[in-house]
Image (cartoon, rainbow, N blue to C red; front, side, top):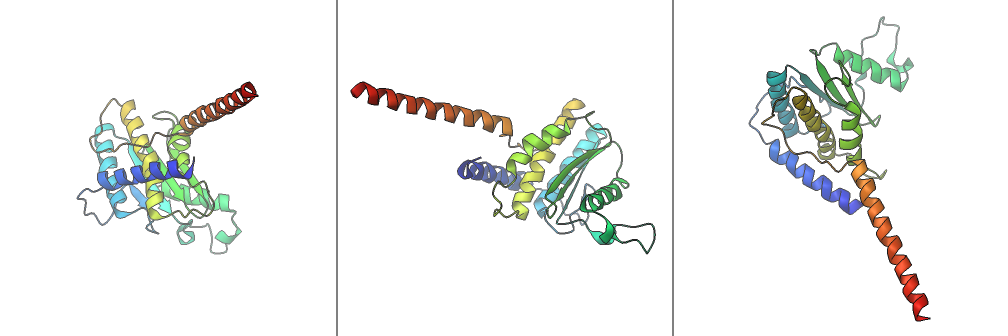
Length: 223
């Protein structure tokens, strides 16, 4: 996605995040943001998740959780014996152990969206995958397109909040649709998924190609 177009998409969506997340929720602890240790999810986004997940659970019985961390919190990984060391685990094993630790505390049916900044990983884990919504569709069409395309782009808390909330809001809508209910507290999502961008790019390429052909034709006609 070109920088200007991506910037427009991101700016518009971030504005929506700020607008819809500005809700009076002075809670010290969020039941649905199960880990935000490094404060990568901005406070208004935490409040928004708490509000929407509470509404979703009340109307459907479904639990939609989120965890956003800079890196896997090693001190929280309990091993079988003191001799064990998390340093012996591979990054993949550490992520799996961390997710399993979180999942043990969740109420079913559930979905947990996990964002790990340092590992550059996003996982959507459901107690019953594919039953209530398409996790892969949410990931590839509503989260991946908002990820930085340049290595030097910084993942700020604002950008991280926009990425995870875009997928979260869409997942909430899809779950609500499964149960045939409407959510009053949800916000618009950025639907400029990969397929739409590919289609747009193809149109641009075709226009450029026809333009080149037209120039060549006119040039030859003059000669």
